[in-house]
Amino acid sequence: MHRDVIRQVIVTKKGKIITSSKDGHIKFWKKTADDIEFVKDYRAHIGEVHRMRENIDGGYLASISQDDKTVKIFDIENYDMMNIIKLDYQGSSLGWVKLKRLNKWILVVGEEESGIIHKYEIDGTKVGEEKGIHRTTINSIRYNSKYDVVVSCDKKGGIEYWSLDEKIRKDLRLAGINFQYKTHTDLYEIQKKSGTGAYQIEYSNDFEKFSITASDGLTRVFEMTTGKLIKRYGGEEGKGEITLEEMEYGRRLATERELYRTEAVEYSNAVFDQSGKILLYAGLEGITAVELETDRVVSVYGVDEIFRFVNIGIWQNYVSKKPRSVESRIQQIDPTIFTTAFKQDRIYLFSNTENEGERDVFNEKPSAEVLSLSVQEQQQQQQQLLKSTEAIVRTTMGDIHLKLYPELTPKTVHNFLALASKGYYNGTIFHRVIRDFMIQGGDPSGDGTGGESVYGAQFEDEFVDSLRHDKPFTFSMANRGPNTNGSQFFITTVPTPWLDNKHTIFGRAVSGLDVITKIEHLKVDKLDRPFKEVSIVSIDIS
Image (cartoon, rainbow, N blue to C red):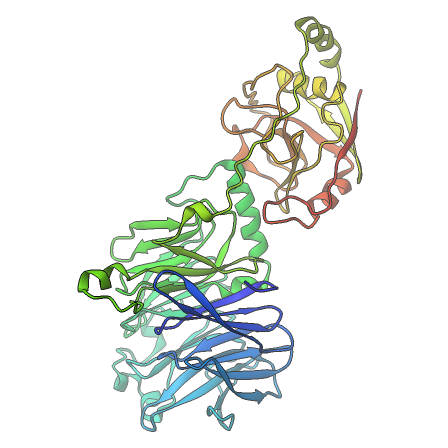
């Protein structure tokens, strides 16, 4: 849907969907009864769109870029750009605050590092600054219209309540906030964890609760009037309701670690459903919907997808299609989750009306090359091959030297060496590469669906207590579950203890480690297949 990675998706109360990407584009869409419809595309900034924020009623949108140091203001209803504000500082965040006594909106922009908050009218006129609220980079500024109070958070975990109304600022209790000092609240919860930053704030529809995501991987829910912590979710790296196959868990964990090393994680948010009783947040397993009162997981969306979802929006309102009855009106309420994904240029939708038949499904399994050995050949080769303890995998990027363990895992080592001696692996590629996890090969079909053992069928695991996935460059068998070993293997690039007693270890890489690292760092597509093919030329046995 964009030409570059999408950073943020906004869903307004009036059914407008707005997306922004790294190449400076902002796109407007509108929700229809059963789909979304593209409306307009703006090249809004020269460089990345750093943040977008709409006002509460969905009338105005502001975007900011640190590359061109400008703020753009849009009329959402008419899809028009209204104004451009040039900045003489780097902006880190922005938000809309309503001056109720004057019935007008003020745009507030947080300054990078200093935490100074600059105030502008819609026509671009600067009307002042707020100093001392934050003393570092502000990541999120959200206005609560019910209490006429702003909640903001920064990269050091600070959470602040404030107001543009002077009376309320002096005493928040005048706005219905039931505390006078932060020490009476849990607002220091994130700040107390050294090095933990607060990311994005989202309100419930009744403005009685708000969520904050943070760099420790946790999503926290606070009560607005007391500042007390209500709930804490996430951060357990897949130890939730969904049981993932260990290889898939490893892939997702590697992606999770990569995400948290980039600024993309700062767009992570957690949104409330229309009732305010359910919270949705993205994590390693997918998008989890949890009931706040009971902590019951209602659903996990996208658990079968390969993407790591990041920024979420939700639509639960009614889209007019001129229904004739209440029943038909109810049928046209189409709850839809909109979400971005890490390093992806599309937005993803989860909806009751989604047609699964139109999805790409990678389930074709090409015929695998078959290697047949007679019983006599197997007996003759077994005597010779089981004496071998070393192999050199010669690839198009260099040689990898392996030390094998025939005394500990004889059947697995024999399988590998027997296939290698017949040239079975020659010309096969490393078809799956996951940074900070492993490189996988050994499939003649080249897509991870093929391969056959030297025994003509899948063979059993050989788990040994002394062989653990406790260090990188471990040589193991790939499988589809217990006792399903064939020809595919992988070499880890980090310790992977969750694979112990699930994948047979039959060797270690002892040289050519730089070759493994080079393969690990190749650019890959969405299926983890390298764009640049690396193939096995031959395997020498000694």
